Length: 403
Image (cartoon, rainbow, N blue to C red; front, side, top):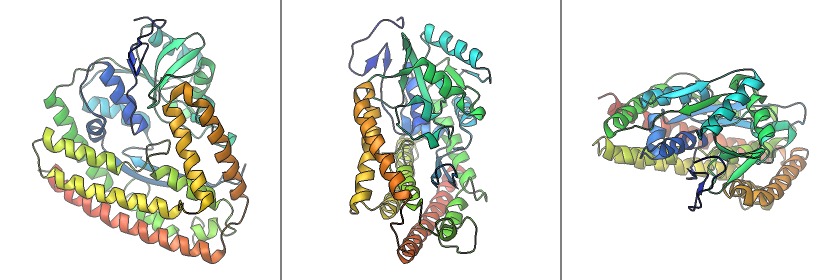
């Protein structure tokens, strides 16, 4: 089918099925594999990729005074290109992966893929794409994987878990791909979708082993100790990066709390804490691997998912009117993206209002020192509980993966 022909099947655009998804990177790969004919679910691809991760970074931006959080919940969250390459290799598939710092060469390769009807996985910066309606302060922060699958005139059709066609100007996509130097205009084309049950089972076993090994490491940035470090920083009055010091005047605190909720809740851009997706994968793996004991592990991770939801709710309580409004606006932006081009006006209105409110409250002092201290103590306690639960769950799961 050429790029100009349209398949009118519901949920299909230019011969490409828009399946939606939960975690952007995992769903991008899953949806491309499905396009190639592989019958595989996102939860199982998630397990094969290494499953869940852990990571915490608090930024302090001088240009606008904001202090947003970056939370890593996917394995190898800090190295998306490596994550993609290692996942495809583990699945035993063939993929052409290209990187270049040259804008012209990058654009030429994308055009060649689209002209050939080949869905291409790319990693654009979110801000230049426009459809997330982020403020200028987000320019250059980075983005997740999306699939470019067709071009009509000067607009490219993207799969970012949307259920209806979502298009961006080709010039905006080219700019977004080259905005972050480390992404190197990534372009990946999966050449085969041949994935039999035995190969998938081997990949899932390997991914689970890798998951437990990485999470059990001692790194305070990229393993479970990151949660313990964050819990300590929430109440450490001496550390320069401690929250009592960083938010001494409470300015920027609302934005940081919104970052927690947006990062943990599935309504956020990154798909949330992913412990629920991991649990779903374990339940499916119990059948695939003929390992019924994984059902109990799935239940354990569903309980941990509940703890993360409660943690996010404690950070940004819905019963505080301003916080409830910002939560709703965040969800409406995501809903607008899911609806594709038809949802862009609603997403634009919600995004504009969301960032107006965030900037307003970041410049204010909505908490007393005592209120902030009490909040930090509560969040720290909840996070320590999560760290303990995840440490135990990973240790228990490792007993299965090392058999």
